[in-house]
Image (cartoon, rainbow, N blue to C red):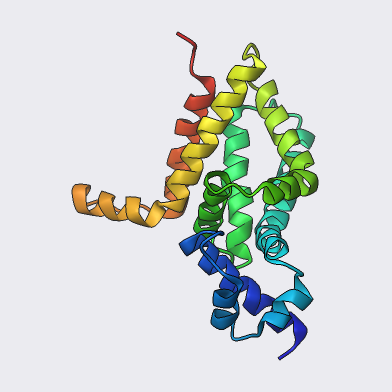
Length: 210
């Protein structure tokens, strides 16, 4: 087995187990057993459990942010005014679509993001901010510019309400779609769901204060 094969087997196992059980509940021994490697391999390639968690996120976030940045460049170069709906469409269609093109599971990515907020992992937040903070600030800044008159604190809350709805919807997509079929006799694909999510998320950002 090559070193790259070993790395990918460890990452695959860690990704699946973290998403299913959480970070604190998943031991390195469980990961190595699932991956079919020994503990020394994890220590050699990643150094620690914290660095393994960061590597799992890096595998998702690097292609996600690269694709989103390229799409934002394209939209800006077009000279058209940037609107909330267009920015969210870029986030969902291009950012998440880039994961599918690489064979990565966007729903699992959303579950991991949700866990990153609900299970305190200070090292992970610092890693994401240091590595991908510029991309986040750029996207958030463009959204804020598309919402003139919204004060920074209100925008902060609306942005996190929108992100929370996005993470919940996509991380729970299989269960939500099953309920849709059972209760309404209807079906929906993930791309169709993302199309429905754009106007709903946009409304959360643009709602008029009472």
